[in-house]
Length: 208
Image (tube, rainbow, N blue to C red; front, side, top):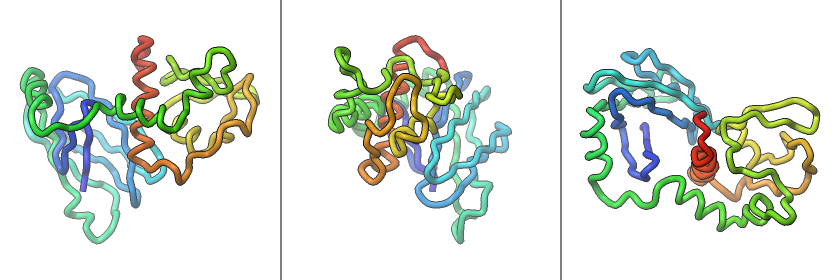
């Protein structure tokens, strides 16, 4: 099935409510096999791959209910992996988002709590002797690496840096300092950490 979680923390199964006229940014991952997020009415098709965080964008212009399917054969239940994208007037969407059961903390807030639980700030937030690159304003910007190349600080880069920190060593920093968190955080927790780091960029005025 398709499972969704809004930045506010509210969750949905097999339905995705979105506001009309606003850009919607999706951060996609799979827990099992390759799927493909496919909304024919929006001309949107994007692969969803285990172990990767991918970003897709769309802006729905007209309220209504639109079919969502998986366009990649993913197993015996492939034909039933369907959902609806429910496009609402912005004021109705805002009202809907505020209703329902307590969703828990927003994603960025939950990610911040996890960030401090893992003591990531000991290196990334220590101003007197910072041992790791600063995260404020990082998301959506190019990062210069020690070998002179550069990489965009997107979802996949952040996930890779958490699980394989020596894969892309940032210029002016040493490798072998940050431990790997592979096996210590699951996919849901990775999404929370990325949401928190992304919020630091938003707070800096970055619009990736």
